[in-house]
Amino acid sequence: MDNVKHNLQLAADACDDKRAHNITALDMEGISVIADYFLICHGNNERQVQAIARSVKNIMAEHDIEIDRIEGFEQGRWVLVDIGDVVCHIFHKEERDYYNLERLWGDAGRVTLDIESKGE
Image (cartoon, rainbow, N blue to C red; front, side):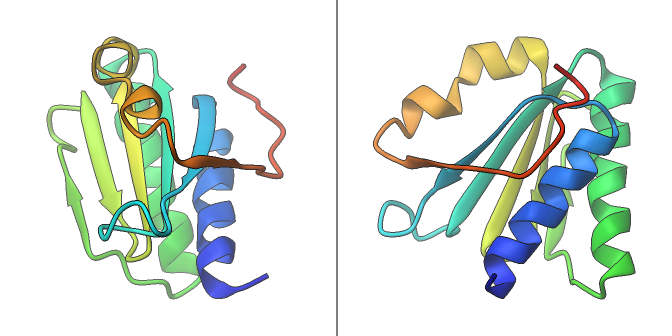
């Protein structure tokens, strides 16, 4: 497994550990210059969204993987965790339904993740 896919899986595991819902990975290679992968999930309230983001931050720190930036943490409605070639979008359910990134980036392929789906 290459480093980028490894980071994607680590982030997905971190989201799953905090019972994130509907964890989805999109292959953005050749579609977006922003990242190779988007990881998208949601929590049911602001505290859960923040806990998921904190979990991603912590697991990356444990593996000495640098996070470029985190945006939206204080509000807990849409937190973006930029891990370089992986961008993790952690939504509040209402925002996820509204922005619907999966539809917006509908031409992106889905990536199979090895997670237990604790949140579903």
